[in-house]
Image (cartoon, rainbow, N blue to C red; front, side, top):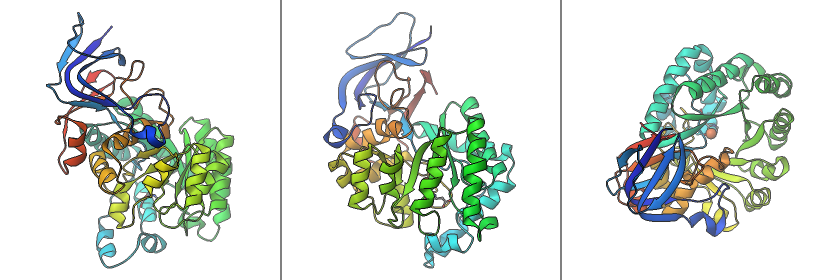
Length: 407
Ligand code: NIG
Ligand code: FE
């Protein structure tokens, strides 16, 4: 039996429960002063206050600092070849995200680089990103395919995710996103590409057990709501839980689709209409909002306060990818959650821990500091929760603990 006792915690801040928190509950968190957390064989076994001694346990003194659950990044496009710094100049000269994509750049140029990369190259590159994410306080990451758009490369990306999950301390949760764009080979045959996804690639992914979720980019010039529905239904037949990139640039019905297909989460939602918010509230879908992408695209910010008021649980994630968000910094996301979404620090904490865990079907095992959950936590160079929401641009992490191990 291996035990770790983190004591002398000045402020322990955590949401509570095994489900997403919505409405007023999103801001109801547990705050403890002079607290401790005891972990046994990787899981939390006790959380309490005051002095504590446990014979035989390793002891870590938090020095009066803030402790929170490890951050959960519930939306990343972690596995990709190359970068796209050349697009910065195009953007500065006025090209929009969809302009660049329609010229064969954007996602499609990353597809070329990802197809050309070996499995080991993709592994090494993503490993570096995961190391950085851990150092920034992230302890679980969702990772999507979607830069292959053919059978071999989509499987290659998902196998890299599986290997990283086995070999890296980070926990990874895999999502199949073959419907990220229509590849150039199918430019004149969209229906043919959708058939390939539904009849060949999704079954292959499911047979190999390579993904838990199926996602689609429901967007003008990418996949319509009707096409997205067909793909997500095909995924469901093979046991893949639906997720939707919805209302990122144009509101073409993606968020309304959540109730029709029973999506666990909808992502982006920058221009989500009231009907979409109502649909998510009805379906119990988690709104996974990505403020660093709004920032990077120079667009507006998702109507997050309306979502909270309507009883939609809100999560936040980075959307780390080489195009619309070349950042993997959840601490920046935390800043933007307060400053742009106008969420309170308590609502933000829930958004990046428990609700993010719910968006990837992990709310029963991570996202809060409670007995039974994994010993994933962050000790911050900060005295309280307000401080990490307020300071910007520095890495405020002091120590990361993953499954009861000090990293
Ligand atoms: O979530 N919107 C679609 N996919 C990503 C961007 C991917 C890319 O530009 O490479 C996103 O923003
Ligand atoms: Fe995305």
